[in-house]
Image (cartoon, rainbow, N blue to C red; front, side):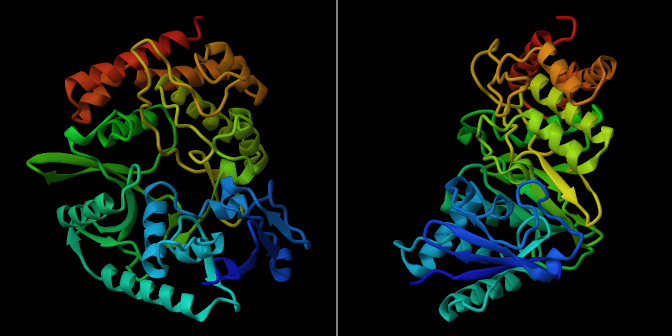
Length: 423
């Protein structure tokens, strides 16, 4: 079966441009009317121009980094590929444009993907049927327990690491719905990360209770975070917690454009070329605000002191409301369980050229290069360090076993000792 030849990209009701399929590459061409607007969705790595862009980087799925943000990864990618296999046979390999059509209107942020005129009729019928199935299931209201049981069964079937799901919640009734545009705006949109049975947990990574404790510590340190909750469910006589965070790409029912640091810079998330210096620079270039620079410094310090090494380019994002850019609320803040008690994790992005055993000198150097004074850096550091110095209180409040509390807290204590400004 031939792949889809082209797909149109929309920002709300504005046609941004069209993506054309090639052999191991795609072309993107901005729409002429969109070029005349003042809206710039990727002002650093994909500036508006009349000539087309060519993309062939497999790390960005052969599409523009901005559009690669819309594609599911991890567990979501496994589910998507299973759907293509079921519809087209096990040998079918979906193109990047196939995958964006699968996303359609369901991705995070404000970008929407619609098939172009060259879209094959048989493929259109497949996606129409999928949309009808989603619409039907979105009308089914379930309790938290029922909804989580159903989605966890699907997660076991599909496989993949760290499954999560988008959902709509009516807190007045306690009922959960599949996230879909047809579900009323009175129902809040959330992202839920599934927990696991204790006997199935192989490490402390992706542990919802730990992530909730980290969320609370980050909030206490002055970092912007979304609303979050732990949602319990019972499985095999064990109560499991699932981490739910409210989506920040929606405001008053309107979708907000979302772009990761990796997409905005065009640098792949795992590249050694993507650093905290890039994060400071992008925050300053897009917002022009010293407050955003301070926010980056807080998050950098928090990640170092809390042993959160999963700080790659897709775990830092920016929001654009049509007028201004700002850092999104911080997300995916959690413990990186690496090595022994006196072993600090290796960070995904370097700080002053260092990715491990980061010192106060490294933090200060990065902060002052970004335009902060020594005094400002030290004040911000202390504001972040204070709640982390009481990490046991937050870990206990998240109902973690004492052994886990002590392990995480002692690792944080060690990281704070190694990175303290008195050194």
